[in-house]
Length: 151
Image: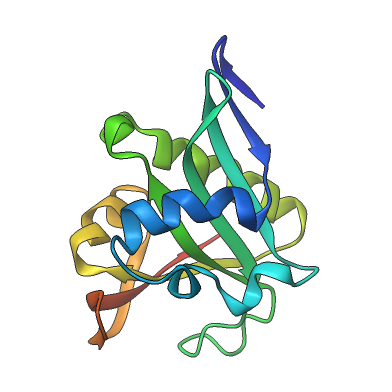
């Protein structure tokens, strides 16, 4: 998908997503903390936003039923949404979400959800997600809220 002459969204590998995950989501932590058990599943999709051939935004999407919506068997979970700090505020995360939603709908997904950091909850709300359940703490990364969007 070409967005502008110097911008595109492409499939990437977990290894390609790792640097941004480490830099933005888990700075100063061990590499293992940025590697997800779901990274290698056949149903996992990693997408990256490229600007001038450099990955500046990533997201990992994998089939996973949300505990709040067990009847939604065609659910995908988003993890590792990260945007290079030099590109934050430029709507790249929103573009990646829209791209992912379109592609996941084609895979018959009915729900997209994530464990959003409270600091990112407004971003998800602006992109059509709603909170559900109680706020909970994730050690080292802080308070989170499950956010979801029907596709």
